[in-house]
Amino acid sequence: MMGRMGDKEQHRIMMVSDFFYPNFGGVENHIYYLSQCLLKLGHKVVVVTHAYGNRSGVRYMTGGLKVYYVPWRPFIMQNTFPTVYGLLPIMRTILIRERITIVHGHQAFSTLCHEALVHARTMGYKVVFTDHSLYGFADAGSIHMNKVLQFTLADVSQAICVSHTSKENTVLRSGLPPQKVFVIPNAVDTSMFKPAVERPSRSEIVIVVISRLVYRKGTDLLVEVIPEVCRLHPNVRFIIGGDGPKRVRLEEMREKHCLQDRVEMLGAVPHSQVQPVLVSGHIFLNSSLTEAFCIAILEAASCGLLTVSTRVGGVPEVLPDDMIVLAEPDPSDMVQAVQKAISILPNIDPQVMHNRMKELYNWQDVAKRTEVVYDHALKCSNQNTLERLSRYLSCGPWAGKVFCFVMMVGFLLWQLLELWQPADDIEVVPDVILSRSCDEEMLQKNQGNEESDTLFL
Image (cartoon, rainbow, N blue to C red; front, side, top):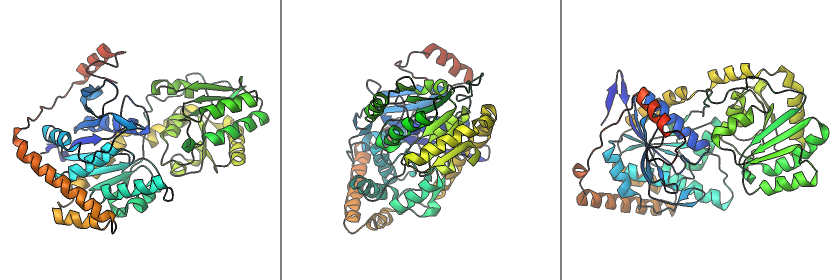
């Protein structure tokens, strides 16, 4: 059931992922900002994620964004345990209660996303999938993930990738037709990430690193790059924000080279405190070994920092050449890139860079482009069960048969649920639209109280 907004269709969208607030990260920010902009465009948006601690049930966020914290506990790395069919009853209830027309899943790592997309297609809903990461083809984990992704995307209506490199990777891994995959980059909240009123002094060059300290983010590269840069430039100081299993390597490096006064370790930095950390520096250093897009680079550039980054994945697509210095993921090449960045710092105007970012990336543009994908998804023809089975069979001689079996069992369980609790017996919830003044008043009341029943961020 859809309404109309002037000449446009009003979509009723369900965002699904294991990754959402109060957890912080690129996927969480993407879902939140995209949902807020879609709400402003007049669409209905609800988010479904798993419970976080004692945060379970229904919560509301800024703008009337409704969030279902399903009482599933994370199993590993914020992912729920894959139950295959355990989510079907509650997913069906939410879809009917909210009169959803499009299910939008995020992140290939999310088991909640995969299960929701498969069940939604079984029930005849249009589904869209957004891939936020790059994956390999050789190791056991990637082979397993790629086969699961092939199963989920075999019947997807449309897909979105955050960069052209990510699109190529997703098409190769999943076997999706390229014409079904759209490229819509991430964006940045430039009202939140602004340069400092007073520019930092250049008597001391401050290089900022904000990242999860894990292998994929290139922490081992930093261990070799930082001592060499400090040796070559006595006026350089590093600020490192983030936490992870590789933090101990950085602390050992700092002790070994006696850099305690030149390498500051902040630990985990709340997202609300990222901007103050960024504006205290001149250069942002990203050492990722793989990256589909990297929102952190956008946030740094919006704060007026010159970026030095490894030339991996979709990173070369993110910023113009005069706003970023790229290097191969090699310590010596990265040291040279940092030296080049230091030499061109006098030519960098943080406010000019910020203004350019406002023109290049904004969430309103992302939302409007996502609207187009939803329109395409709704125009896709409905497929019967036999047509769906044929698509799953094409996934491989053995895997295809397993996928067909999983789909048929899910179809039978759905039919049993229809008999046990007919859709007409499920109460439809009224749409709650908060006015802007009401929203701001509630925000002030709930400020500083993150654990209230109604959550506003």
